[in-house]
Amino acid sequence: MGRTRVIDLRSAARVWQRNLWVYRDRWYYGLLPNFFEPLFYLLGLGVGLGYYVSSGGQFGQDYLSYIAPGLVAASAMNGAAFETTYNVFVKLHFGKLYDAMVTTRVNMEDVAVGEWWWAVTRSVIYGGIFLLITLFFDTPLTWRLLLAVPAIALVGYCFSAIGLAFTSVIHIIDVFSYFFTLFITPSFLFSGIFFPVQERFPVSLVWVAQATPLYRAVRLLRGIINGHWQGLGYDVVYLLVVGTALGVFAIWRMQRRVIR
Amino acid sequence: MSSTEAVVEVASLVKRYGDVHAVEGVSFEVRRGEFFGMLGPNGAGKSTLMRMIYQVTPSTSGTLRVLGMAAGERARAIKQRLGVVPQMDNLDTELRVMDNLLIYARFNGITGVRARQRAEELLVFADLVEKRNVMVDELSGGMKRRLTLARGLMNDPEIVVLDEPTTGLDPQVRLNLWNKLEELRTQGKTLMMSTHYMDEAERLCDRLVIMDHGSIIASGAPQALIHDHLPPLVIEARAEAGEGHRLEDAAGKLGLDAVRSGDRVSVFVDDADAALASLRGQGWRLERAFVRPANLEDVFLKLTGRALRE
Image (cartoon, rainbow over the protein chains, first blue to last red):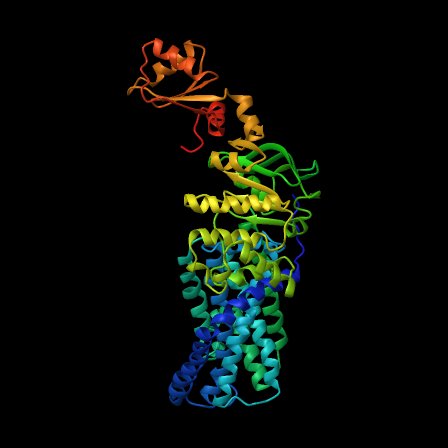
């Protein structure tokens, strides 16, 4: 029996809308932590630890402004990662929500795309709030910040696809601790948010850090916010290619898990 | 009441999962306006068959057409005109009752005032008007089932597919749901239901197929099925411990059709008094024997040698 491969964007939009309805009812539970998290990071690491870090680093900035763009990228990553791992897994396994959705005009491919878009939306909310908070900590208020928003969305696009792809292959919820401990956490620490990896990593390992999506995301956000454009095209292409490849894989896998 | 137009056409349909043969070459038709049943024990292939019909399981081979459209190729168009009530309640627990209905209308492309009106009507139909703003988890089991039914009706479907709709419900809740289903039938909807309850199939279905191990082993109207396979009456007798097979043999020697399950023996007869008299004439006391009309459960027992629910 042939499967309808074409994705119906209107159906995907309705799956996105379903998530919006849920969020609409309880956004105030999630939003406040979204404000505090960046505040704590910027105060603790930027204002606190930054005092002891000699200023005049990479771009002649103080430490707080050095780490702020990277933290924006990391918060977009976290938003996407949580949404596409635990949340999607619960809907897939325990709620059997997707099994119900696909009895309507909506196909499973549309569901996967809708969830992907929603995760991008969440990461724009997370990352956008973080960006706003950094304005109170010396981030220059320039027109370039308008470009930072689509950049955050691109980071969300890539990390949502990574999260969805991971969720689509695992069967036990505990396996997510591997994802977070062995991928998200090291990405956070070693992707150039807190120090330039090319200066502190052994030469033979620099490429590992540079191959991670978060390294690209941090470079992109830092470049846009500071107005250093050189090489950003590579970062954009990298995030687009990795996101699209893993997203397509995730759609295919999720389709096979529900339609069986 | 039912026309001859076939709204579901199934021919030599097969579904295999590796070596597991879930559905093994079934063929039947469902006509517009009828209440069609699939009766069989757990694992007979009913759910797989239903899932193929509502387009969430691809078939391995065979043909399947729903409302004249080829399954798979036209999945979206078919699903848009089908209402599905799955076996387990998979309501959206993160949304309120009303939003559960509205979002399903949207999934099927129905928005705005039309969706609202339809949801209001169905809240009345499902006796859930006062629960409209309640979260799903606060509903009782029967309410959840009625909401699942209402959700499946949001797109005003031509065919309603119900997978074991009353499994696990209290008797009075079942009765209430049966009334709702009969109401839908009088509205002219085509209904397809799978069940492993003989009484449910007998009461509701115009026509049904009996399934076992992925195949259809009998089909027809409930009364005709009973009439075709069995005499009208059944003597239910219980032998002394360990004597069951002897009683079965004794009935057999008298030319009676008997099926044994442990020490319980069911004897299918035209004339119950005469049969009881002959058995008692052979020394069987059968003090606790009673006579009842034959039913679909007996047909299944007769055809497979097993009870529907074991």
